[in-house]
Image 1 (cartoon, rainbow, N blue to C red):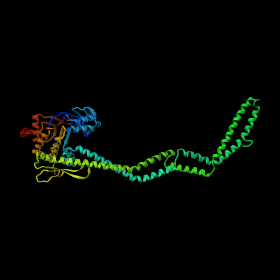
Image 2: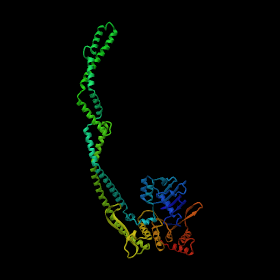
Image 3: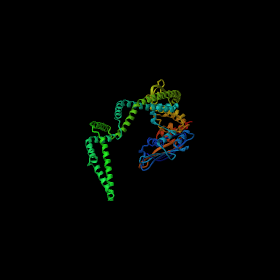
Length: 555
């Protein structure tokens, strides 16, 4: 249960430390005094969206702490363990909002993610506000209420998970089919490029070697003439360098013993003669390598033109870059060729998921139909207790032909407040006061099977007064036997059923208005209920009426 609420610097509440008790507590006060602001602050501690306009003093933090005391709640233990926190039966949820717009969340002084705080407090408290009565008219809300009351929420969540998987698979299939349609021409183009490069038989470094050969072939005649001249000078005829050096070597050999320095010169000339002979042999071999036929040059230039064209087409500087592209093109073609297999696999997954979804939908429909058969008579009894003796309630569940987000059922709540009038959809026939009673009746059924320790009602008694309000108060008091119930109300007939009453008032300090809340003692409570009956100040008759109402409350 909620045991304490501490508020600092929230809207017109500068400071508040409020203690709560078990059973039914009501919060009363004039419109605009700050009752809803109090719940707004509590909502902040529960992880609801922060509105930074609530900061009255932007130089000070807004801090809201909600203290809970829980017992025998294994799911909470599991939740704390999953988050790596030690479980304690006293749980403090704190939210801090700074002037810079920063929001921080804590549980038992440990920083936590806002999403986890929301999950935690969802097991501790339920806040039912006036607009929830209007939400009862929506089909989505009705489905949620039905699944909650039937105990089929977990099965619904299972269905929703499979349904979302199916949507994702269908979206993936659609995209893959689009790829298949757009890839037909791409595949043809890739195939053409791959065949072109395969036929080109590229080898790294080929262009460089061909350019060398091209340059030699272009100058073949000049090279041959030079080699021929080189042969003549080096080694042919009586005046060739080789012949003359040979003659010199012989002459030096004849006088080498006479002049030692000539011996060294002779050796050097002999080495030079051997070098000349070697040059002559090398030039002779080169003569055979250069081929003068124009066809050879034409073949080289044709191949070079082919390579240059490929370099330009594929925006590459050499064969290595084109070969890299060739490998990438083959990989892309393989991936495009596998699209058909992907489509086949996706279609099988969709078929299997559809089958699983249908089975889950059938189980969900069965639970809903069985559960609605038990809910209808219980709702009828509660509506009678809430001042609608001829009230009728029914739930229509029609099968759908295809899966929908909420299952394969078209669910609609029907209602009639008058005898002899057929039930019609709630959104068509229910007035504001009737919606309040319908909502409270459904909430009572839900609370009976819920483990939520605390329920808060924020002015759900709209459009209700007199005897009907009295009966609503009785029902809420009964509900408070199994839960802590906090209720904001303007109805004295409801307020008298509470064990505890708080009063909210707005106080003007001269510079600004602030909201204050106090726990009323029995005498103060009588006066407050009398004010609610007749106005301020209350009349003697109103005070007497208040006493009478309080005394008539029975457990």
